[in-house]
Image (cartoon, rainbow over the protein chains, first blue to last red):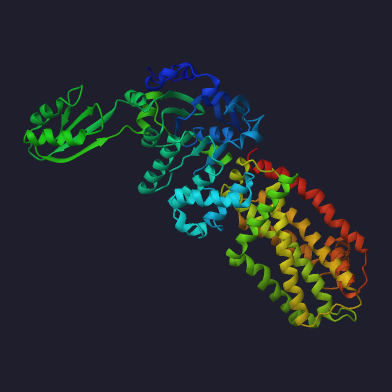
Length: 350
Length: 255
């Protein structure tokens, strides 16, 4: 399926869904957990949202990918009823985010990059408070809190003030807060920004578990690998517009796939190396100054295969790496410009 | 309405539970006022002529009123923190009653104010203050007036907490705007020793009106303006500042 070209973002909505889910394509309204049409929002002179259209099918994950200031957070704030759009409509589980805001709040969970938890309360007190604000009786809220602490590996820290928690623990608690009422739709605003790799991985696993249970997730991220791992569909957003939408494979095709880079030992046979690796790529590998580069068809197993082939050919390897396409690569390909920092006013004003 | 009350109580409970865990704030409620009481009683007190009333009896109602005015400071700091840490966003994404965040904040101040009244009254009694020429009913009415006045100032500080960019700015507002107001009143010295301009201001200053009413209720002093005047002031303050704070809350939260 072709990626929608820049400027024609609105076509993305009408484009049939990717092959693996196309059996049910032509999604009807009740198959859509989130449906956004022509959303505009400005802060003074800054056009934060410049006509955003999005669809998220029930039980899937949409990754909203873009640099700081692209409008990601603004989209989330509108959908989570925190912000009124200037124009356009947005429906979540069939409810209008402006007209039905009060009712909608019972069906959504929000977790953000700032980990909005009370530092002076314990983990359990935080969750109990949120449960009671959802209207649960105290005992029920407490029981639900314990259940979530258990599930998020925080049971041992349940009665410690949050200020003693690590960054990863806070994020998990923040996510637990968002899940207190078992909402069918979850908004995650840069859920792993600033986390160490281990906490990041554990949060990813948690989110995958939620999706497996049927939760619909809209997550914003600056990281392609995060969107790659979690999202069924990725929408690339820049200057308040969705400039491309598709699966991560489709976006990567656009960028040119994974690149394998092999640095050979001094004096190694470059020609032998190129011959050994040629079968791994559709194009002929490029060799210069003892560095052999090729785009590989898939990331999985490429390194092992390359090492095996080079070893069998008797070529010595000094270093070898797979370079993944970065967000900059995607932007460069899609927009023809590097993803520079847009005016940072959006996050401030929001 | 039922929801508003229960949500307000949840927020108020949260504020009170976290209070003992921020010891610096608790010190601000207890140790600091005691220091000021002792300072005025023993350092300045001897030099201030209060026309036949022992200075300690003149001082205690005045200094309690000053402290109560600052009781709402916890609201300013707390709201400021909640805005910056994103908790306000969390609250706004929940199906809770909208005004409950502010109502819960100011409500919990009533409890901390009661604590501060108790601490200062006991300190006063130890250093020679006594309720005289009054009745138990008047004393209790005095506590009620203090709590009402403190509650009104909580709304002033709620607005301050939402307006300023940092806790430090809230602090300077307190010292630059509110602190002098409490001194240009009858709280610490009889106003008739002040230059004319200050005296005229002190006479209409709501602090003077509240302090005089407190002296009337607790030590049988002349009420100056009537006690009912002192009761009206808190309502005037609430009527002005509560809507401003609520409006600002909606905007600070991005709605």
